[in-house]
Image (cartoon, rainbow, N blue to C red; front, side):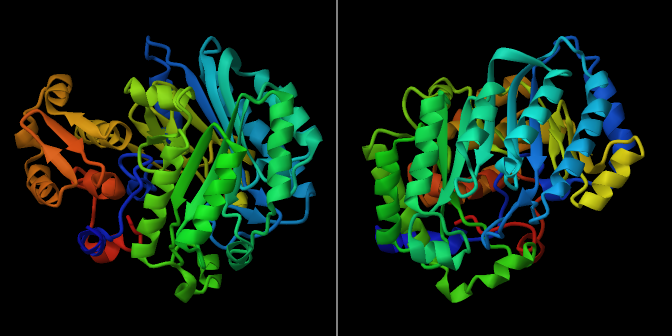
Length: 459
């Protein structure tokens, strides 16, 4: 079995999207700018269904550089930059909010980064109160924030709770000291436990911990020891991400010694150990990289086939329009994707001029909508009902996806999927190659050489 698995790793270990969107972000076009974004909002507001709102707020600042990081960040010790950034965030809110129906409920908000808790408690309170002036926060809204225990204080968490934040996500990545040193993120277990104890005392209803496998110097044994500590901490959710090593896109990743990165075979062993340990501990395995306790909303959404996937990963709010605020933030509503400028200077220049800072965007075609539905069904539910697709979009599945069906035959022969006249079902082995399975339905995948420079390895 092990020999067979490793041969599959060699066969399917190629570059490909993570499918937090479809089409993937590299397809977005510079021909879509602020004017097109504004027009799209106007059209979306004509929708009589009056869909709920979700907001993503990007806080790009960090105190230190984590070598593994793939996010859009700014490393600074000049905290006066944050007050300036908040001024521009408020101006962007001033542009967006009047265009939206004020009766629409804000059912989800996430602050990501960067490090949102790089903001002081005063700044957290200031931004939160400003946003509540413009958005009607539903009483059951899911308000989440990413926190870094290394800089977190009790006052930070108090400010968040006082402003109705109810979920936190804590980046741990790995507790092993050698691994932490290799990626320039030294964070001892004690301060992580302290952050979680504070959060529980203050009444945060859900705690998520992020881990990354495939980091330099990781071994199956060392990561297993980290998992034991995480299980003892007992968060509601655990995300276990595959390290995206893309030094041609993120130059700072060149600071990682490539010879220290685990082989694809070792990475899969780590993932399989993770799945075994966490499911034995009572967690439900969700999608390709999330785990949740059975009573968590994410697990309930998986059981009821209402799971959703977006730029923050797996989510329970499937029908909300997502608007991104801040540098590099991405919006998705209706058939529109839009991303803000990725540098502070471009972001500030646009907002100061009274326009949105849209840098790239995309309008989905009817073909895109079919493929997005299929890919997201596979990524979230691990199965696909062909009859449902045909009825929903008025197509013949076998004809519409003729090339995809041919590719599925190879996946079926390798034991990754079970394909019947009515369904495509991902096997337990296939979950390790879920991105590859989804790629069968992606019409935008370019040649292998070009794709290698756009995406990380699938396994």
